[in-house]
Amino acid sequence: MAGRIRTGVRVTAVTRDGVDVTRTIDRDEHPLLVRTIEADGTVHDLPARAVIDASGTWGRTNPLGHSGLPAPGEDGAAPYMAGPLPDVLGRDRDRFAGRHALVVGMGHSAANTLLDLAALAAAEPGTRITWAVRGASVARLYGGGDADGLPARGALGTRLKQAVASVVIELVRGFTITRFSTPDGGPSRSPAGRRTASGSWRPTSSWPPQGSAPTWTCSERSASTAAPRPRSSSRR
Figure 1: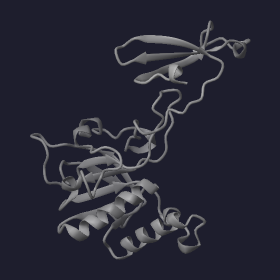
Figure 2: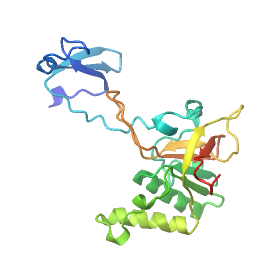
Figure 3: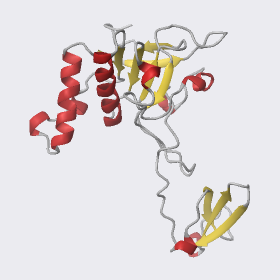
């Protein structure tokens, strides 16, 4: 297999050899053609009988805005993004200690990040945690507790539920981000800022674009504007 493994290569397209995208007659009788580009820019077209999309989801986080689109100003806020699954209790500790962190989303990666932040808050005075979700309920993430078919998953949900009940984590429901703004002159002390994707990604290839609900973490380093949906009357 060693001679067939190529590293440092990105797939940019998959098509049918010898036919353009508008032709459908006998299209399935033509072999597939995979276009790749190497790190030095060299392009190769590789024939194939089948293609398995195992590109993964790590390198392409979902946008934070509604409807699967980036919120206005989100690209400009990129310098404040800390990356997916921050090492809250290790390498990234100083980025969150003593600051207000906002986690947006409802995946298990978000749950792990929230629990790490809760542990950090216990050791670092002034650390605040807000958890914002688009829906009205987080019961799905809490899971079945002791009755959960996967004990570790049930324990994760139980710990998270306890942290919310004890007000270590402030839960905000019905939340939608409408735009981001960053002040002139760089980072400032504001309600939420540094953003870290924590658990929802798109395939790294662009064929086809896919996605699911985003999960992000923000800490108090730049300005952002986030507005709840009108139906939520209990939160800012």
